[in-house]
Image (cartoon, rainbow, N blue to C red; front, side, top):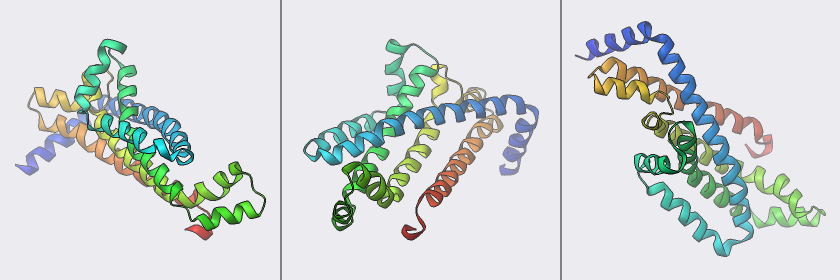
Length: 216
């Protein structure tokens, strides 16, 4: 049984390679765009919350609420406002990527040793210099852990984006389900899993390169 499914998977990859490749590129594009927007929103917001801690629980709580909404429901909710296609998918995927990045950015920066910040102040650094030269480098591993979590999450949810006409590897999965074709399902699921592992590896490598040697 297992060998038969594996053969179906290989046959599907070989016979439908152009379709698989196009779906993979579409999936990757949706992931990168959504992740980029999530980072641009969540990292500055997380930094801002460290300066206004009295509202941090409220803002992070709102992001947590969005995270609890079923992905399919959130995608469906976007259709009346943004129609179908990539726009509602990117907005929904961006929302799903916010919480882990926001929470880790906030947690990482408030967890920086106060002594390190005081040393920076004693050296005459401005608050902006302390942020970029002390706080962010010391909390980078925690921030990157949030980004890596968001990346894997977005890649998984992107498989549902095909339901709103955004394309991606979900097209292969849902075609396989509708036709009871295990090979087609795997042709969508396996590349998605490989994509998640690949991006996680790249981000880990970036984290290592970006972290000063003395802090590794």
